[in-house]
Length: 163
Image (cartoon, rainbow, N blue to C red; front, side, top):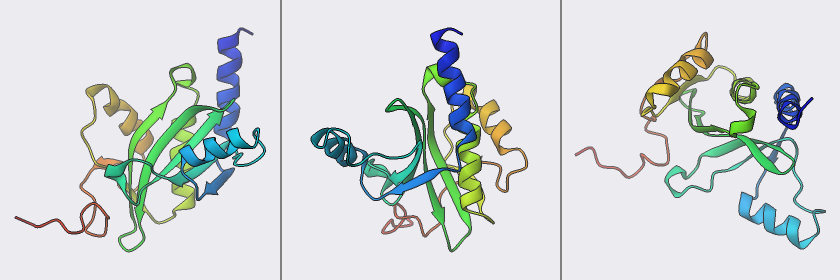
């Protein structure tokens, strides 16, 4: 098997392990710094991790991510409203060498398992090329990952005027 085939086989195995998630309180930059300072002994995470989002425009959101050989293989930003039983996912990313290995489907399925009775949406604004992806992963999913603005409980909506 060639190197690309080995990488894709590793990604498919990683997809099968999507329920093995470590929830980390530290942001990515802090984890990397701690690992560097301790020669990799501290801050090591699992194959799938769930952490606070670093993006300023997504305060209160989280990131579900997977890594292979310390390189990001997949990541998606999400937020779940416990009051409305609704969740939003944004910015799914799969590294090019791991496309079509099931990481996105497995990562989104794990989020749904971790948040039962939740209807799932996106904020919209998808490229035309992404529409088949969202239709495929949204089949049979409450909400279907349809574009929808966040509910009034979302941190970004607080303090906005309705004018």
